[in-house]
Amino acid sequence: MRPSAGAARSPPQSKVTTTTPRNKHSISRVLIILSIVLPVILAITIVGVASTPQAVLFPRLQSFIVTRFSNTVCANKRIGFLCLTSGPHRRIFSSRTMATSTGASLPFERERRVAELAVQRAAVLSKAVYNSKVKGTLEKDDNSPVTIADFGAQSLVFASLDKNFPDDNIIGEEDSADLRSNKELTGLVFKAVTDAIYSNATGQSSSSSSTSSGPVPELGTVSNETEMMDFIDKGRHTESGKGRVWALDPIDGTKGFLRGGQYAIALALLVDGVVEVGVLGCPNLGEDGGVLVSAVRGQGTVVRPLSSDFSTLADPSRVTMKPITTSSEAAFCEGVESGHSNHNLQGKIASGLGITKDPVRYDSQVKYAALALGQAEIYLRLPTSMKYEEKIWDHAAGSLVVEEAGGAVFDMYGDKLDFTTGRTFKRNKGVIVMPKGIAEDVVRVVSEAAIEVYGAKSVL
Ligand SMILES: *[C@@H]1O[C@H](CO)[C@@H](O)[C@H](O)[C@H]1NC(C)=O
Ligand SMILES: *[C@@H]1O[C@H](CO)[C@@H](O)[C@H](O)[C@H]1NC(C)=O
Image (cartoon, rainbow, N blue to C red):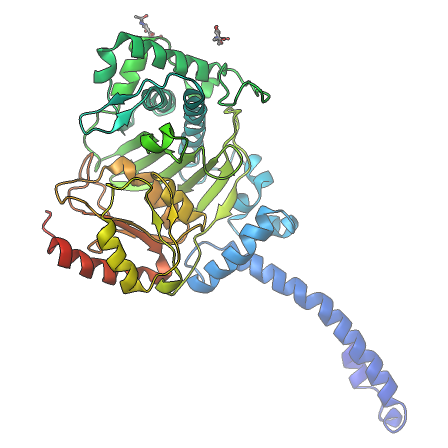
């Protein structure tokens, strides 16, 4: 700046004849300096705002900037050096910082890592079961199917939790009753579990190269069929509102799994009834071997590729929902199977909100992941019967993943989900999920429609 100030105060005698060329010269110098300095300041500001903890600055501006820049720019590492240099979330933007920050202690860092690795190992098992001829499908009492993959994934994940957090309680969808009466199926599940632990199965077809990693001591092991049953039955805990409780759906969307569609391995940690960690393994989402989406409360949501070498985690990138503010811009994410949601009512709500975009269809809790990744905006789960109680493992991980990506999750009457009521929701009916920017609008339209169709809320 000094040269230009000097030029402006140049001696008066030059005023008549020579000021014009000299001023032109200094003005162009100022312009050159500004044209270099301003974009740099702008870039630093954008990255700084984008990586500040949520809701500190103007949330709407921030989510706009985060979506526009951090996903595209930082994830592609095109201006990676800027992502590295500013903001407390740099470890999320920068995989290099994250990989070397093992000594750091963000809240629930270890829980998140163990949960991600455990889900990743279970994903390898599920892919191997899908690729094998025998899937060992059984019908449960509620007519929903259960397979070798459900039992195998549950015992693998619980072996990992038992190894790392032996004092924590666990709620899991499956129990071993059906297995104990079926010796042959037990043997098949144990073989799938052992293959996964020893990486004989990589989840890939035999033609592709296998990245065998061998047993991972950190993730625990399953020594025999008895121990496998015992691990599966650790999920029988019934209380969810006190202390540390993990909730697992080992294969969410078994029907999708069986037909090669979407399914999720969903694991969450609740502390005193609040979801603090959520991990969704989605082996068929995206093109390349699936994704692992995870969130810790207050730390945002990240996505990384599922790695078939389950001893390591791939580099993460930050994700956010599309920060729309007008409901009519939204697209629904709907189930593939009818019977999980009331589609008639959904049609009514769509016209109430002025939604005309075609819905995106996915099985299972993958819908939460799809919303967090910006593939659609609204997910409605409307009861087909008021007797049905939603299960906590169907929503715990997904709800946190969406909330940390800029979304809001309520029941169909506009109340927060209450995770303290045990294995099922007793104070909530239906679930609605959307970006914060349109939450008020969506909650109003849905709750009015819900009262019209189901009557006023009559749970506890
Ligand atoms: C899988 O690996 C384990 C440990 O290396 C080995 O004992 C077992 O025989 C292998 N199973 C198959 C089917 O290759
Ligand atoms: C199964 O493995 C566990 C843990 O290694 C061991 O304590 C138990 O004795 C084994 N049970 C049988 C029946 O082999």
